[in-house]
Image 1 (cartoon, rainbow, N blue to C red):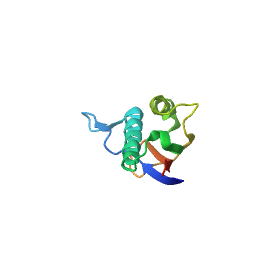
Image 2: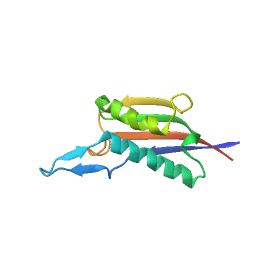
Image 3: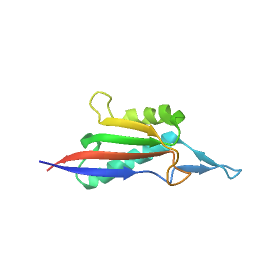
Length: 109
């Protein structure tokens, strides 16, 4: 028997403010933070990233795909990792967000 958990995660904190007041948004930092947040939520349910079976990734700009994928591949194996769909969206709830990830995990009972 398994429980299914759905997690929707994004990260507001990984934004640098430059001396001219503009925001420096880093897809690698935001990706790492989002995946770490998902891992933390899963740990609270006695699960791990290995239990993730499906991810939907929302990117504000597909030019960020390679930077996102570089970090993603440090957490998930292409051969045995979860199914993944990556789509571009017009915007996310904050202009500080470059990425949002929805994860589905099957947790053994």
